[in-house]
Image 1 (cartoon, rainbow, N blue to C red):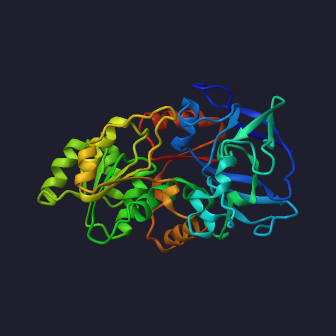
Image 2 (cartoon, rainbow, N blue to C red; image 1 turned 180 degrees about the vertical axis):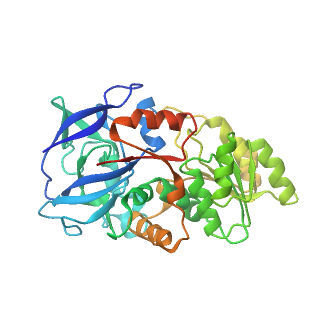
Image 3 (tube, rainbow, N blue to C red; image 1 turned 30 degrees about the vertical axis):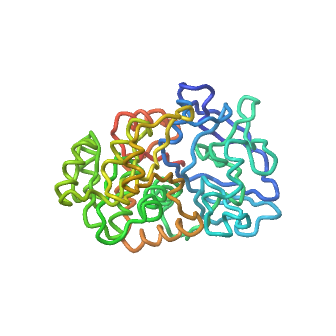
Length: 369
């Protein structure tokens, strides 16, 4: 079938909206008509080369849609089902899925390839195969995806809001709830208040943190942090240190979550200085693929028994966390409407990413016809 998609042809270039051709689903796949797709920073990492992927590629890994066709071996979906994408596929059978760590599913080894079934992309533009971002590539009117990358949701949920739970909300919320293991009464610092950081604030609030410090150089982002539950705000980690030191009478924070637009090695040391003895730094932001050096005190790491933890998809399980978070939204506990700063047409994808780079958006969303 034919469709349209935002394709990246070369590093540093703009996204180009192209006419594309799609193959029919293989036995374990489904054809999805996209309804909404979030403009997440991870797709910008593809454009800059921080995340390596074969080009040309169709962007988008945070989305929602409606199933139109399923392959012969698909058992969890039927045409008409509403779904959100999980940019981490989960098979349900490997060691990691079976032990409750779906985020580490062995199918993740296919993430930079064209498909799980045979490595071949299902989409073509100008006669060339187009790789899908994180196996979903949802900057497209239609896409063929593996059943392992799709999570069925309730049909009464607004799909433009549900799309955000596909990545940004779950990653940020889980960074606090799962990776940082925030407990009632904790003091939490979130460094970087964008689409991920604002949800780390929500996660810390919902987990019962006493004080939550939102750190961002932009006043608009600091104010956004307060709307989502931050009790205090600071312009940078050094101002945050003075604030947390005063709040805790020198004990410092229980955890600090790094959710800046890009993870840099020189940020880790100052962020680790924010946490107490036995405290944890959670690194959710993505650093460039080539970066291998960080600045931190090994003396402090050992003698103060601190921890540095990576956090992929917030350390959660897509098939558990996505429906749970959407139930929180229906209950009014989780804020989703307030996350969407602006909606864009597919043809406005470059405008959306420029707005993100300019710090205007918490989350831009492509809304399809």
